[in-house]
Amino acid sequence: MPGLLSSPVCLTVIWFLSWSLRPSCAQIQSDEVLDIQYGHLESNVTLACGQSQIRTTVVWRHNQSSVLPWHTVTSDGRLVLLHVDHSAQGHYSCYDDRGLLLHSISLRLGYPPGLLSVSCQVPNHTLVRCSWEESVRTFLPAQYDVSYRGNGHEWRPCVVDVARRRCDIDHPSFWQTIHTMRVTETNALGSETTYVRFKLHELLKPDPPESVLVKELQGYPRRLVVSWSFPSSWPQHDAFPLLFHIRYKPQGSMYWSEIFSKESPAVIFDALAGHFHHIQIRARDDVNSDSQWSEWTLSSPAKPWEVFTTPEPEEEEFFTDDVVVSITKPETSTAKTYNPEFEDEGNLGLVILLVLFSVVILTTVLSLIFVVWVRQRRRDHVTKQELTSMVKMKSMPI
Ligand SMILES: *[C@@H]1O[C@H](CO)[C@@H](O)[C@H](O)[C@H]1NC(C)=O
Ligand SMILES: *[C@@H]1O[C@H](CO)[C@@H](O)[C@H](O)[C@H]1NC(C)=O
Ligand SMILES: *[C@@H]1O[C@H](CO)[C@@H](O)[C@H](O)[C@H]1NC(C)=O
Image 1: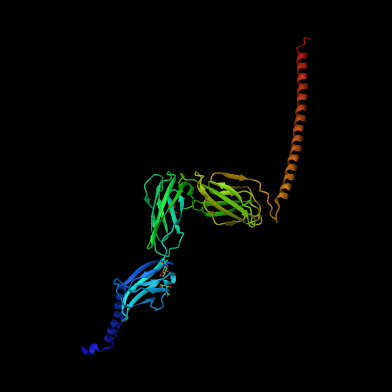
Image 2: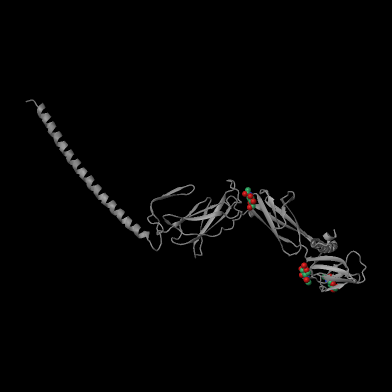
């Protein structure tokens, strides 16, 4: 047994235990007396050294240092910090004249809540999401109590997300035109209630359209086909149709052109041939014209089809959702390398020549047929006359 006790392993264990237990005891001791106190910035804050008021001499320390912010100590040992600023925050402890710790306080400074600026988003007919910002920074943790009601109805709670400072109303009643929201912020120094009124149908603002795709159309140097999908937060019901606003401009231009569409895809017919374009889309509830347009989508760059990429435009069909368009003649273009306008004129001349030629041939053939027919008729007439005269002669009594 003595051999075991004196073994190096056992000694190490004993040393380790005594080392690790000592600080934890000290920790427990200071935890027992730690208080959190909140104070108003720019005011005088009084810290008491524990419950008991009768102290002959008390020594205060701040963040373990004997340097204290601007202060006075009262006769009963309380520390009065004057006109405190942020640097006066931290850990305060008081000791008696023998250096024994009497009490510890953690001081946090800030302001009572002020009015909030509240804003609400309505991304679809089933959700209202309200968020708020402090008009005064309080620097202190706060709690929020939020409720709302439609005109002349009961207050209902709004489900709060404290970290994001927002709350959600599920399935709001759109038919109640005006809603009131009440947000009460409470912190250690006070509380304040903010009221806001809003009209849901005016706040309705969809998220921007998604999956925007702009493609060239082969054979058409002035066209672009724009497709997109509904915002994923918008219910895909026919009950809530959206109107889409598409704007586009050649790169470097200041002026947007625009088209409206209720369905994807849409075709731009007047793009500038040979140039990159910027295309953006936004959406709005098609039925409720008081509602708001979504934000624009990010710019999608695209260039119309160009002749040198694929030669010889041929007769071609393309599909949109509801129409099949069939075009036989290529459009005119202003591309530098190729000018179909001239070729078009050449083609036109050829066509006119062909038409004239065929008209001449047709007239010739028709007049020939006419001449032959006239001659035939004359001959017929002559033979008829001959026949009748022969018959007459035969029937004549001799
Ligand atoms: C803070 O205390 C000082 C000194 O006692 C006094 O002059 C001052 O008016 C006090 N300020 C406030 C805001 O109470
Ligand atoms: C004391 O500590 C607190 C928090 O730990 C800090 O905010 C404060 O600035 C410190 N003050 C001084 C004077 O060290
Ligand atoms: C309404 O929008 C919210 C937030 O984007 C979304 O979570 C919810 O699914 C949407 N409701 C419907 C019916 O699409």
